[in-house]
Amino acid sequence: MSLDCGVFHTRYESDMGLRPRPLQRIRLGVFALFVLVFPFVASPYWLDLANQVAIATVGAIGLNILVGYTGQISLGQGAFMAIGAYTAGLLTLNFGVPWGASVFAACLVTAAAGTFFGLPSLRLKGLYLAIATLAAQEIVEWGMTHWTAVTGGTEAIVLPAPVLFGIRLNSNFNFYWLAVLTAAGTALFAANLLRSRIGRAFEAVRDQDVAASVIGVDVFRTKLLAFATSSFFVGLAGAMIAFHRNIITWERFTLSTSIVFLAMIIVGGLGSIRGSFLGAALIALLPAMITNVGRAIQDTAPQAASLLPYAQQAVFGIVIILFLIFEPRGLSKLWENAKDYFHVWPFAYRRGETRTG
Amino acid sequence: MRPAAGERAILELSDLTLRFGGVTSLAGLTMEVRRGELLALIGPNGAGKTSVLNCVSGLYRPQAGSISLTGRDGARHALQRLAPHRIAALGVARTFQNIELFKRMTVLDNLMLGRHVHMNGGVLSGGLYWGRQREREIEHRRAVEQVIDFMNLEPLRSAVVGNLAYGNQRLVEMARALALDPHLLLLDEPTAGMNAEEKESMARFILDVHEEQGITVVVVDHSIDVIMDIADRVVVLDFGRRIAEGRPEEVRNDPAVIDAYLGAKADDPGHDEDRP
Image (cartoon, rainbow over all chains, first blue to last red; front, side, top):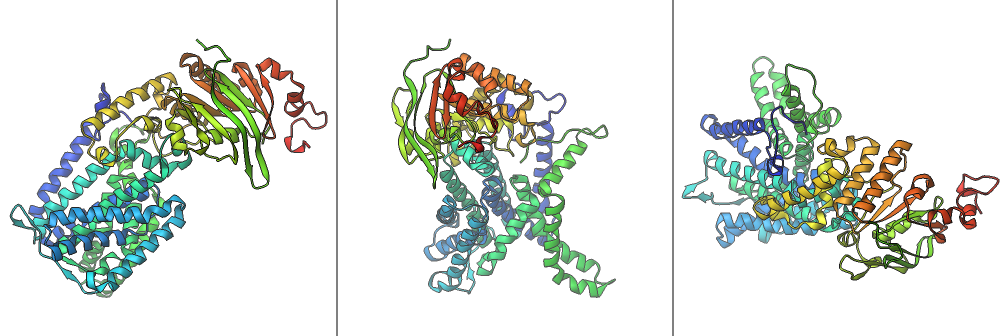
């Protein structure tokens, strides 16, 4: 960690803080202010996007705990989000459970499902484990569309809008506060977890599982904990999706959802909470940006504009490839680099930041 | 002060047999490590030195024989059926021949992992990072800082381990083992790949660990230069058997050792694979 001039920690408490330096706290404050003011100035369109980003952030943090921090590749993100969404929705719809309680129940059910599908990690690593989680994805997808009695099959499930403190969260403006608080809470919980005992064990398993076991980490238990914790937040994201649109359709939880989320954490930065947010923001906003470009060039180049919707998938792919080639550590690392550059600006070059996250 | 040698054994291996398919790595090995001693385990390549450490730390399961550790509390534990993390919890720490650190983590986090077995706290308390959990983290940070001080790692505290020079990585790995506050420390070729100066500095650390902290140490090495100088006792292995044992100067003159290991064979002294 680089030290700022004039910042001297005299207690471990202050050195071990999440934001140990004043400048970091100021940046966080500015960002918080932006988040507070944003809904009052943004159009409903942008508010809707912001809600999507907040929900995707929760899901991406969940996935990053498993993939980025613990090194267990999962292709089952869509399935786990589906379990969260359907559990929350069906509990509310069929049993009249208050939406808050059903969201929490959905998190727990998803955590249990994640732990179950994490069992192959006892023997499987890397791509082999990825294929095992792909099985989870396929099983759940089949269940969603064929277990008609429970899930309604390919029909959409319509939910009542959640009510919080007497306010119906039926508009994007009202839902925004719930989404942002959930995302912030998830980020804080994950950041705390990852700087304490279990989080270190996650990273140890990722970097060197043999050494982890010899230093006293129960590797299999730690992997299952990672699956459970990750799935908890992924399930939360799924439940949030259900209550954001007040509708559940199986198309939102397919294999391509899993891949989009993997793209988020790769583009954002594996093993980084900030990266989870940045990646979620970029990937969720990419289609909107392409649409806006299309609108802007509609008059000058109508033919190009009409082709743009088809280009969406291609742009998506190109962005991922560019990141893999030029900055495998993602947007999070770019942000670090920018900070490093301005750290002593306009003076000389400084050695890079060593702390990640 | 160094406890007198000849006291009760802290670790006893008896009739330990380990095979990989048709290859016998340990052939009924019997040996002991005494409380408070610095034991060197030497032998030519393929003699089974690292296999001994891997059996003791639970990475290999021997087909036959037993490994018995006398814990801090005086109770005896059969290690041959325990998982590695349980053995670590009994106070057995080790380093590896090919440094096995958590490369993307900082030195500090690597050492904090050394405290893993001494800490409590699960996902929920970690995520909330409140009250007891926070105090625990700080308490163990304090313990880790003592190890950092002992190993002179202050300048590297916040460096990412993968970026460190080779010699420093060796020191960090030893520091991580020390952070576990070990009862028995196993060092697998701690001076491998080091120059003379680094070897001496490492030997100094090993002696300090042994003498100042009174930790029982087993050092595996095939370079005899440094290790023979600091060991209290030497066990020599060849083909998975113990061929000699004693004080360094005794072992050095043992004909069996000279024949098997020190390269007295007139034709080709350096190459073990040429041996019958």
